[in-house]
Image (cartoon, helix red, strand yellow):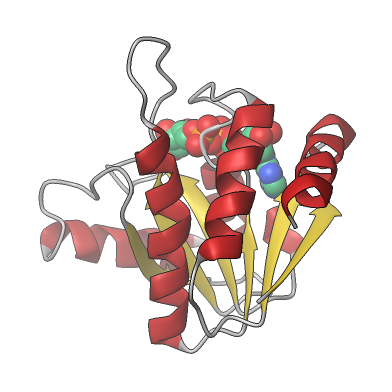
Length: 171
Ligand code: AR6
């Protein structure tokens, strides 16, 4: 699996699947989640509601992942994952790592060859960017997957530079 970095908007990525930094409700929110539902149109929310009415009545647990259509977006699928809220008193790194591992498993099940990830948990959920970058990059590098390219899409240059430094260190 090749790991690449781009600075930009994940909703514009022409990849097979983009990963959404969702919440357990699967019913939308701000940040990446808000942008995906806004630009992808109502089909995504309709599939999320159907998931809530069936497999995920109690919501999607933290660290797990599930796919829907990508609606009007250039990608074919959205893989929704729920990152942990950052905590100073409790180490939740395994849950953040799980988001990447489980998203890659879903990508494999879909047959997705190219997958774009945001920096899960680093916005509303307040995970420090350098620590998130280390966890995300090392987890993806260690994952067994048929995905050809895992692309991290960083929203601003500060995040891009942190991921770039971490990738040089571990890649
Ligand atoms: N493309 C790429 N990255 C983005 C984009 C974008 N369009 N928009 C924001 N980012 P966040 P979280 C960056 O808050 O921390 C939502 O309300 C952003 O700068 O989207 O996992 C959900 O519904 C940050 O670095 O996700 C949940 O309730 C990163 O993406 C909650 O927020 C993640 O920020 C999830 O919080």
